[in-house]
Length: 133
Image (cartoon, one colour):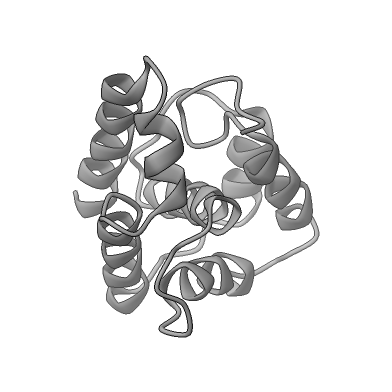
């Protein structure tokens, strides 16, 4: 699965996305990640899209002042781009979390097969609470 931690940035897909974020000055990449996770074109949410959406949601939470564990690249980006995510973007973030934790989510299925499913679920629920605050 290319994951080394259960937090939002603890996997290859999120790390690659964060690299792309460094070259973006607005929230277009964040919104695109959420749109990819919420697309109606597919019934099954693939793990890479879910991982990137979680990273995007982490950015939204940080922009709202609700920082999770330290992440140098995200912290620097948020400091450099003090943007305010609108209510529609926050709502998309909440919808994406619901889909990631839903029945047709590859990422959830992969974590469910591991001994760390409970801890992963707790980290996603913690992120959901931070983005909703």
